[in-house]
Image 1 (tube, helix red, strand yellow):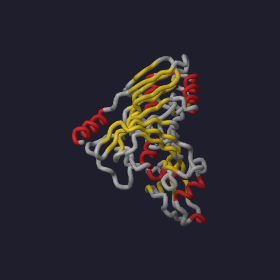
Image 2 (tube, rainbow, N blue to C red):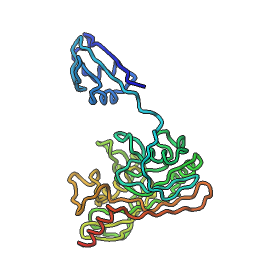
Image 3 (cartoon, helix red, strand yellow):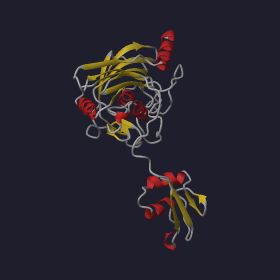
Image 4 (cartoon, one colour):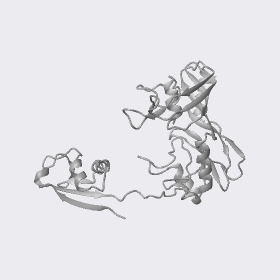
Length: 311
């Protein structure tokens, strides 16, 4: 399916109207946000020239709109190398690298883990959502580590039920800023959308968000950093990053939740110093407990080696 072209003429009564608002009233099948995206990308022209969304129209002006086809509902498989930790007829356990997005979203249409898994195991098509086949849980783009993908609908239903019942063990290795004083700790604070920045999450007043529980244990201390073992009891978006920042110890490499001024790192860190190192669940077919461990990635080993050498 190719582009759809619309040609419109500004009526006298609409003189002075903003381009995006005027178009929203003439092309109701497109949201205003979608129209603004098309305008920004140069797919809307006024008298043959691209204009900004706030452009004020004049009577008689000719407006042309090129509408690209909507993205395909089904995900296209992509042959991307995967680090497979375990695979059988029901589940696939992979070690995701930092920098890879789990499934398509805003600004991330290609190169996703879901597309790679679909190429590796085509039977995952139809398991879960069409744009996230096989995806049971997620890791942030900058976080690496273990993920289990469902290869059948039965496995998907079993694993999602286990997650809801908090029967899946997810442990992370993290390096955070500052020296964590207590040997162990628990953060039990609700998480919801940030009140001013909807792309971020935040600790919010009780009753405003969803309960989020994070446990941690100090594994190693350095003069300005601490290595933690972190266990999730719930699985909220950005949970560890939000909770660690809330107690004054943001994850190293996390500029989103690390404060207004980026915190210095002793070595470059491509991604967050956060790695899903241990994953355990009941196998959907046998109900036997399965446990998997992933070694630390090179980026975190380099950071820890430097901290140990200089600490």
